[in-house]
Image (spheres, one colour):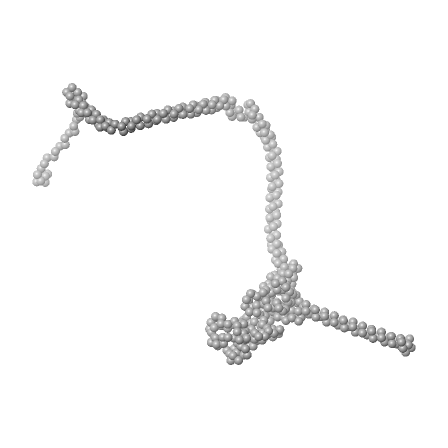
Length: 425
């Protein structure tokens, strides 16, 4: 049915429905566009498309386990990704593979000229590897974001507005020496010393402003910051560990080399085990042969306590009785000797006591009679005089005579001669 055949009421309702459908389609289209834009924004935010990225590069021996788009890690965080992997030219013998990557904001602030390195390490057992960067420990930041001005003369430095807010962007040394005069980041307050050191053009940066984009890159060779452009990248030295597959291959090679020795060892072990089995079988036969002797020995030892046994052969009964009698007599003799010694000691003690009493009595007598010594002396003198008188008595004189002995011959006296006669002889 044609539209002209409809009534005005139906045509009005139909136009209203068309407008509602149109608005619905427009709203759905707007929601779809909004969702798509939000998805792109969320993806960009998640992948850091709106963040500043600092480019770096390094060299490795090979690109095994690495591919473009792999994350770059720092202290366990994903801080960037690999953007390019390519082989070096054939005439480059020092380096094999070129790897370029970038670090997102703010993780590039951890990269300094000292201590920061790129390390390629194994990620799993299937040969996958990951690129890691290490935090710097000193030196200078690899990139700066302050406005940089290069090769300014000393006169231009003196005309800078608010010069104390400007800082050096390079290392300065004393004239003709290696002593450091100034470092990057130091304020421009010693221009006279810089002039005395012989510098005419230096690089400086404005510390009053920090831009979002990179303005300078550190040059390790010249020890200064240089203006940054899209073709300059900072070089991080690499520490590379071999992939797990290479380690497994090396391990398999070592195992193959060690297998002959292991087989020889197993053969030797087999020989030792076979010899041990033969030895145990021979020991079994020896044990069977020794079983009767052991049985006889057990029977003999069981009858040692019976009469006529081996013990009585070694020590007969009469010897046992004699030994017992001897030991009894010895015991009695020791008892008697002990008794006699006790009596003797007692008698000796009594004798010593009597002697002590005598000496004490004599001492007491001497102490009481002080003339006893003079009387004894006179008695001895009188006894001597009596004996001398007996010697001179005619009746007893012969009893005290001494026997005479032959005297030795007298020595011949030499004949005395005059000196003249002695000379003639």
